[in-house]
Length: 357
Image 1 (tube, rainbow, N blue to C red):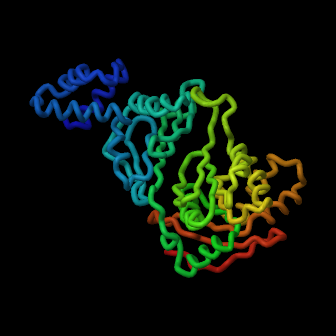
Image 2: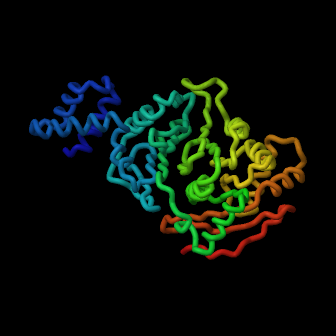
């Protein structure tokens, strides 16, 4: 039996009858049970391998140790899937539902985030900043679901997203302090592009970065990072919403504000912040077109305002200068797909660009 099989077998036994995590003697006995013919030297190696696995996130630790893996996906019992270099593929690793539940418990218990029958889904993050989403039955029909999204620690140059002439346009947008909304589908590279654009701005400005889950790694001498804090066992009863943090950011003397993603009433506060003179700010929104991006901003802003639709549209048009569309290609690369300027009357003016292929 190979080390992965031994670790999986011991892990199943620990799920059914869990000892203390540092009970090395009991783990060693379980290893002996699973590999009775192994030599003492092999038993030592197996024991250390199993203990290392149990102290981390179980069998998926090896996948998370691979810097090229961007997503780890587990759908109930069965194969574990990963994304590497834009390619989604199954791994040889096969887990049972009980093992997946144990991994989920290990992730969320230290965070004070409940995930059980009363709270069958939860979001959190690993120590390295990776975003984690878990779903349990009865919401997930075929067993527990776990999705881990990892983020690049390095900043990509703008040349990775666009042709040279488009890179020049993007740089001028930053220098001219245009307010930029980057839009696109999930996984299209919105956050990665904002990271690159904002890092250029951060060389000479104070940036306040507001995120739900920390994904941006903006480099600069005056970068202040704020994170949403939801209510939980080890958190304030009231929590701190994205909208709260947009308001707080205005008291931290920002030159520019970066909102990781707008998806609710905080859009109204962001628009107000831009109107107070914090030009050159950045944010992202899920949308498939420039018009869809503006439309969603209007919808979100209306959640926190009693103003008329016409007034809100006018406020959005006045606040947003440039819309940048992102697209994920078939080979996994993320590229700038469109560039548009927003006129004062809300008209969207496309800027011709050459899309990388």
